[in-house]
Image (cartoon, rainbow, N blue to C red):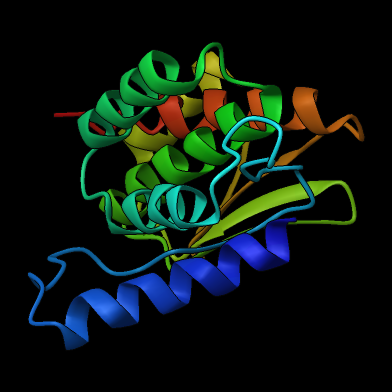
Length: 170
C-alpha cells in the first residue's frame, strides 16, 4: 500500500510541475514507513476518485488543505477507515517535516529518523522536555526516536515528535 502511495505521490508532484503548477517553496520530503496508508476500494469505489485523493494529498502545501480534504471525504463517503486517516496523517507529517527542513523521514529497525534538521540547543531542549527519549545528532543533523512495532502506535509517536518540533500549521 505505502509503496504505491509513494509512487503516486512522486507522479502527482511531477504532473503538477509539468502542467505549470506552482513550484513548492519547501523541499519534498520522502517519508518511508510500513504504516498501512491507502484509499481502499470499499471506501472510495471509483478509481478516478481514488487517484484524485492521492493527487490532492501529494499536492497539499499546508495541513489545512488536508483537513479540508478529510472533511470532503467524510461528507462524500462517510467515516474514514484507518488507512485513509493514516494516509492523510502521513501527508501532514510530510508537510510539517519539510517546514523543519527534513529531506528524508523513515522508520528502520525500530527507529524513526528525520534528516537533515537544523536545531539549536533551545529547540533540542524543548523537544527533549516533551519527549525525553528523542535524540538529536548534531553531526548528522538527525532527529530520531525509538518507536514501537505496532504501526498505529508508531504513527502516534512520530506525530508527537513532529509536533514537538513546534512547526506552525497555517
